[in-house]
Length: 257
Ligand code: ADP
Image (tube, rainbow, N blue to C red; front, side):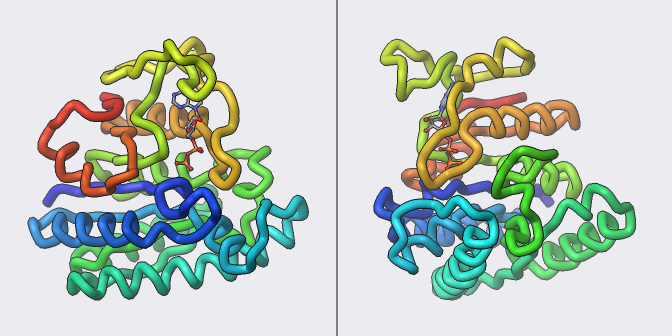
């Protein structure tokens, strides 16, 4: 059976004011449930815990201190999973939460245990919903060290479970030769089969206020997939049902292959 990892960013899940984008979440749940019904095995890597937490607490900006961010993430993660639970249930889809730390990369026993959990969930037609365990993992939040953002995490999950494809949904149509928010003449790259220093030079800036990674971490994720002989598609998550079209081979977004 075909294995697929879908990663959604904060910008897909929340409105600019921090409130949950329930239409987008509903469409995502509808789409992924449909794929499972078609016999596919689907893993969802979901960002958004901090964005949702900020919205829920009525706070405008990411606090600067790590413990404050972790507190916000703890509130937001619960709310996010509650909404997923409700929306997936409408489509009869079961979900399971997997919160990961870097241990899964560092320690072979942790790695094997996580892999076993994924295998069993997928066999049961459950959609695992993955996030970094913000409460204990500080790497994600100050993003100075190692991996620690959900872009690269999603590639690690995808390669760990031997998924053929990683679909990354963001607030932009794909990877451009330069940041289209800064340069009006930026051109969308529809296919990329090799990533080098020059590719990274096109990925300037850090992205949105609530998102974290920007394009650099997405390119690193794509690099991981390419190195493993797998593919990644970066596409606009405004309408998450775009996933159906992407799987039919519609040339939307950027295909890294
Ligand atoms: P998400 O919250 O979905 O993870 P991010 O805001 O972290 O998204 O990253 C996407 C953003 O990266 C885009 O909205 C854009 O502002 C920025 N960006 C920088 N360089 C590029 C590029 N070359 N092509 C596309 N987007 C770029």
